[in-house]
Image (cartoon, rainbow, N blue to C red; front, side):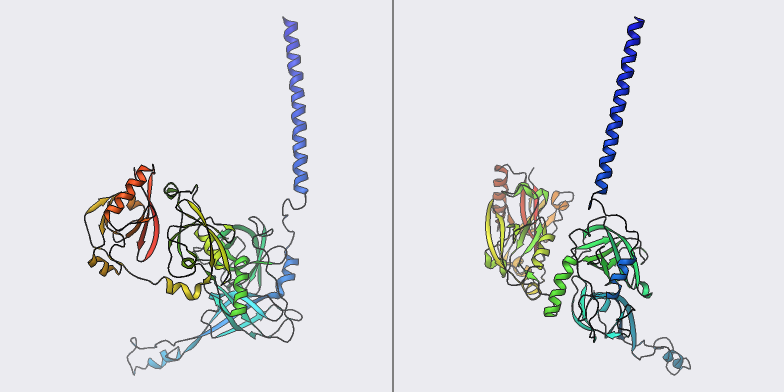
Length: 494
């Protein structure tokens, strides 16, 4: 027994030693593999030892911008010091009614040898005079140069300026804000005129991409490179010295940089600059529809849709989409060969498309895929006419369905609301705590479709509910208009 036990212990010890050796070999192999991968070209972006070479390369193309504006004079002693008072002259010496000039500072960068300069619209907005200071150095303009405003785009906060100089100016080029060098985690460098202190450099990484600050065409790069007041309009460089963004805004509780800065991506800026240079204004493509996102709770109520994606058409006024045969309730799934995930993506793609272009569009309508071709209009001239602002008011009625009190549109209501009789059902009350209330429906909303079919009466609505229930649907899709603006809402039937 003792001999057997000793042999067993010896065998177990040998087995442990063998496993230990194998584990050691495996760890060594994994470590070697990891080191090899890290050493592989392009596997990781090494932290630069210095930004000095890059700063020296691009600095001559970065400029400081000074603007001045004539503002109305102060009212002096009026309302404060009685007329004829000995203090009246004192107050007049420090302002009075005389107009005065107000100055502001910002940044920009040269994009061509003949003197085109990019900056932010808010840097030069309302300015009477714009002057450009160049980075000091051999061959650089030593004096302030007056700049001409070529054009602006408030939607993206971009402006294009032009200066005249006898010699070619040093300039920088735009890079790919969607490619290598602009990935989350890549190093970037910002330049500008922070707080009026003159030319300054800061560095950081790309913190996030595709940020939106509530603008229609927003596509911001977020960075932790320090951006302060006066940096607006300056360039954000990748490590190749290409501009991948225009420094525009910061998120801060105190007005200073806390490492959350935003630069409009070059993918947006290049298109805007090209249009400003050619036309002096933007000329964006226009599809001519109102749209909303497809939500998860809508999927079950829409034939042929497997997931919450695309842009649902809520209104089609006279324009390109109507001419192409598009209808309210259509779901745009592809535009010009690009699969559409949501309304933001569609708006950006349409806006970046040329006016007059014939674009193939794939839509889902009542379970069928349909191919259309839309000839794009121009948003700047067509949108306001196609979607005029209007108001609607409703009067109470007494039919309750799906947590809502609904009313058919009477002639009196139609006249008051500026619609035609039979245009739909008016919501006159929404039950507290109902799903309709949770979905944001309110008194005064007008239901024009249910189950993607028009409704003109309570009977129509009841029929749509019954049809959806018989088809085994869990929800009913409603097209609701509020102040003339339509949207789809899915309400549960259980």
